[in-house]
Length: 325
Image (cartoon, rainbow, N blue to C red; front, side, top):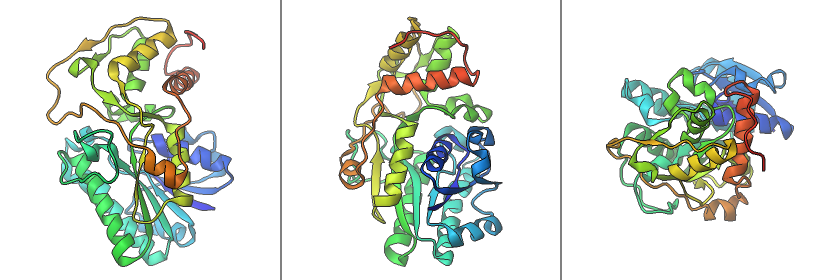
C-alpha cells in the first residue's frame, strides 16, 4: 500500500512510519519539523521518501495524493501551550492546513484519510469518555482545533462524499521519539516521559492537584497499530477512541517509574492548576475493539520499561540499569 504520512517525523508519526515499513508499505513523509525531526526516522531513512514541508505545499502534496492509497495526518499544533504565543498561527496551521489537505484529496480522488484528533475534546466531561458523548464546545484553542477538524472531516465524508475520513481521538501517548518536542518546549512531552528524566537525574517532579489527576496512558506503538487498523477497517465519518480503558494518577505513574529505577523520589505539589485543567481522562475502548479489532497490548510498566531503554540507548538519560522485571 502507498501511504502518505503528514507529520511523519514527529512523535506518533515516526512510530507509525517505522511500523509501516515493517509491514512492507511504501511510505512518503511530509513534515515541517516543528516538533519532529528526521532523527526520529533514522532506522528507516533509506526506505522512505521525505520532504520538509507543510500542508500548504500543494506542489509537493499533489503528486503523492494522486497515487496514495491512504493518507495519515499527524500534523498540526499538538498541545494547548503551543497556541498561547499566537492562536492565529496555531489555528491557521492546524485547521486551515487540514482543510487544504481535504480539498486536495478531493481534487486528486485520494480515497481515505485517517487523522489525529484528541481526548482534549472531552474536557472535564463524564468518564469513561465515549465517542457518542455530546461535545458542545471546547474550552481552549487546542481542543477547538481538533473539534473543527472533526467537523470538516465529516462534511467532506458525509456531504461532499470524498475522501473517506476517519478521526482517531488519541489519549495520553508516551514512548520513544518524543524528545524532539524539547526543541519547542519540554512541557509538551508526556508527563511520564518527563518523570523518567526527572527520576533518572534525581530531580524532584512537580505536579498540580497533589498528583491525583489521572490519564489514560497508551504506549505509542499500540497507537501506531490502531492507526493501521483504522486505515483497513475504519468507517468513513466515524470517530474512534484510541485508549486502554485504564486510568492512572500522576502519583501512581511516578511510583512505577521510581520502582523501575529503584528510587523513591517524592513529587512537589504546585497550586493552583491552570483554568479548565483536566482532572480525569479515561476513554472507553469498546467501539475501537468492536469495529477495528483494536486492543492495547502494552501494560503501563511494559511500555515504561521500553521507553527507559530507548532513552538510555539514545543518551537522553544515563546508563544506570535500575530494576529488572
